[in-house]
Amino acid sequence: MNSAVLPLPTVIYAFVFNYSLFTIHYSPHSSYSSPMTKKYIEKILTARVYDVAVETPLEVAVTLSERQNNQVLLKREDLQSVFSFKLRGAYNCIYQLTQTKKVKGVVAASAGNHAQGVALAAKKLGLSATIVMPVTTPDIKVDAVKSYAAKAVLIGDNYDEACAYATELAAKQKLDFIHPYDDSDVIAGQGTVGLEIVRQHADFIDAIFVPVGGGGLVAGVGAIVKYLSPKTKIIGVEPADAASMTEALKNNRRVTLDHVGIFADGVAVKQVGKETFRVAKQCVDQMITVTTDEICAAIKDIFDDTRSITEPAGALAVAGLKKYIAQKKVRNKTLIAINSGANMNFDRLRHVSERAEIGEQREALFAVTIPERPGSFKIFCKTLGKRGITEFNYRYSDKNDAQVFAGVQLREGLKERKELIGRLKSKKYPVLDMTDNEMAKMHIRHLVGGRAALKDEVLYRFEFPERPGALLDFLTRIGTRWNISLFHYRNHGAAFGRVLVGLQIPKGERKELVQYLDTLAYPYWEETENPAYQLFLSL
Image 1 (tube, rainbow, N blue to C red):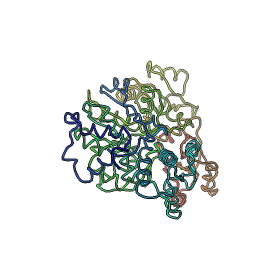
Image 2 (image 1 turned 180 degrees about the horizontal axis):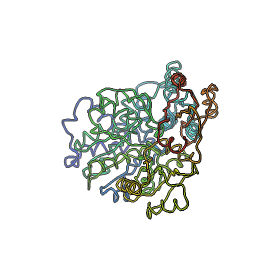
Image 3 (image 1 turned 45 degrees about the vertical axis):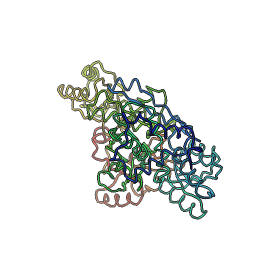
Image 4 (image 1 turned 90 degrees about the horizontal axis):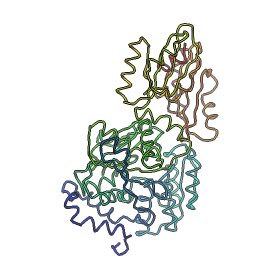
């Protein structure tokens, strides 16, 4: 391939790459001049992405910058035609294949953004595409794939099962399998995001925050940015419950997680790619993990500045950026976060709005014991002071004490939360902080209203693949041997459902119960000793 056939933006970047601008802030550095790195620099500079992708803007987040006392810029990959950066790597990979061989057709396994990228790329290049998706994939994503004339095949409950079928199908039908991240041409395509960033911001960049799933984006961005600006930090961001790259870099080897969180499903990867890990080891300075609540807060931050809504994985970088500022106490730095995608199901917004204020440390949840007598509510509210009450759950329990589950607005974050707890204790109120109690936030707050004197009750929390009939299937697998004494389920528009189940199990049968639960293949956690359960649901 020669420059005469390269799309114009790539030619411009290749020119800028050699221009004297980079002698000021972006001089190539010998530390990042290994044969592997040079290979990626060449591949990124000649990547074919702009047949389908656009150069997305790099925008100043005015409100976030003011609040965080730093210059914060957002790389708006959520503005691509498929609302994600994934079409860059997918198109470049398929295009490069067509330059070296006759391609019969392509196959991919994905539940979301990669699926749409491959489908669009194949349509643009006149190829047939089969996208294997888990049966849990929301209709909006399946319909999006079909809109690009690709064939959607629904197989399995998760990505691993879909991927196994896709690779088998590719081998059987002699089709090319397009990996979502562990491919050098995919990595190079994603690397054009980093190339755009250094061209769009001529001044020095202190750090770039990159969402990490399988590692394709952070490897590509890291390779080019570290070569051009070695002092710019590349900081990867993962959910705390899906931190496969964090664990890999910590152990200096790829690890396979036993379980990954389901909220940020776009980065829910049990093991990072072999090639992406090899590149990341050379160019990633630091990994940061963030909670579900912190991701929800970041979605709100992005909305406040842009009036757009990113998906959970798309907001990871902003969540990590905020955590980095809080941990390092940095000020007056130039920090860039990559908004990687906006394929959000509308019905998930309910969950996001519930958790955003907690993630921003603007709301606290408390379990408080107050006297069961006239006027006690009024006295309790006076103790809280002039703070907004976001939630107040109570039901009569006995003649002496009442248990209250309360949500309280905060203005000064964690400091105020601790001060309020101290104030309540000074007034002799027994209080428990439920702000970080996942079961309390997910289930108990919706169940406060009664207790039961049940013998031998144990409590378990489960996750199961969300699809039509899934709840019935779950109940069928639980079986009828033991009595179900409590059941709470909420659909959050995600690929997995969350259930809280109470079971009456004689102590002599509890070991047998655990053995049985292990055969169900559902992730589960025992919550019998959780203080939220003990206070509000158990006598």
